[in-house]
Length: 513
Ligand code: ATP
Ligand code: MG
Ligand code: MG
Ligand code: MG
Image 1 (tube, rainbow, N blue to C red):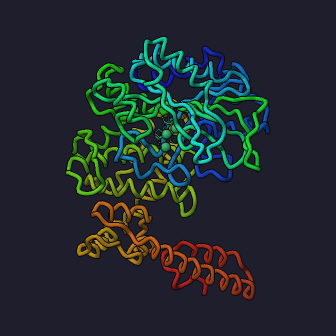
Image 2 (cartoon, protein in one colour):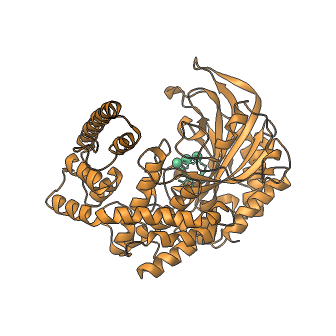
Image 3 (spheres, rainbow, N blue to C red):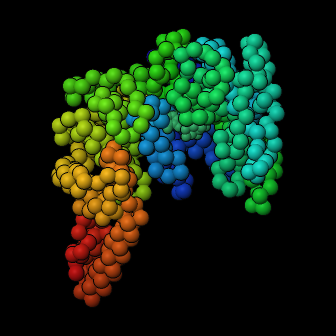
């Protein structure tokens, strides 16, 4: 199967089971508390909260089936905010900033039995993943930590039946997990419930007990592929949990993880190679382009540490980071999240600047990043048509960003290098990180990245203190501008200029003073 066929077979499978196939929601979430859409369920929250009737069959562009069952592939970004996978991207092979989450939902319709049984049928029968290589986790509260509710016996029993039917021992294949991994809450109050996840043993041998030890242990040889959340309680303000009248199912599967494992294992048959999402053909056009532009070859090595990487490890990390970041930035811009100075816009700028830095490490010529847009459109345009219609805008925005950052990047790097050359085992001064941020546009995490590569940390306390002082100065300058404007007539121009001092480089000299 190609990646596209894997995605389509997921959707077809759930369509056959009466699900309405809905389009991915925008990466720009409806909810004010969220930086980016970070899970398939985000767009369905009003239904779970009972604020909206389950009416998915009427959603624009959807293939109508039942109102109470939906499935889709959802663009997600997990960078910045509560879910932040940015630091792992490129250094591991299965966390992206932007990824597709395949999901199926029941709104007060089917529950654990159907969700787990269908999920099992899809991955073991339709796709042919060997059952022997799978583990299921079920919720087992750690009462010493005050975890809510009870052991999820219902999920356990369903799993036990499914494993036994394959001649496998439930005591080996079912793993307990406490609140941290196996209980989902939207917030301190509201709909919540236990979840049950499927993990894939990717050890070269199919040693079940060795694989079991790796479940939820951050190992690339045993990774989580699918989370089934059972929304069955309401968390009350007094800390108690009451059963919901209508119970719901919310699942999420990492599309690139399945497609990558499929590719590296030759259709789930040969487990000798290191598994990697980047082996999926959905990344192939980007990798081809990066190789063509840089003249380097990707060898799929994965470093075990963050400093002292070999030349090839550095090259391979850079390939993965660039392919990932180009997807993320392109999809964000297509959904109107432009690089900027605050909030989610600043996260996108940081990701883009990081990408530019890694391109530089590969020796790519300035202005290269916009050339990575076409391969993203080639691989994802058929699924997310906004990439096709917005392609020119995406390129233009990236071009502008690259031009402005390109003017200060080299100078900033040489300052960083000269001022840290003598440092060993101490923190990079906060004042240097601040200067790089303020004058050369280096996001703090980029300076931290450069520091980590040299085995150093950054004095973030000092950096924050200097940031606070700068904000104070900007505020004072802003106040003064408004006073001047009020006494001198037309405020609009001055007001705009003074607003700009909030984020231009030199706040020592306020524009309209
Ligand atoms: P992990 O423990 O591997 O970080 P998670 O528990 O944070 O995953 P969930 O919130 O349960 O992930 O999301 C559902 C599914 O989405 C996961 O089972 C996984 O397959 C996929 N997924 C989660 N985060 C990422 C990511 N950063 N990149 C790619 N796929 C991801
Ligand atoms: Mg995670
Ligand atoms: Mg997890
Ligand atoms: Mg999970």
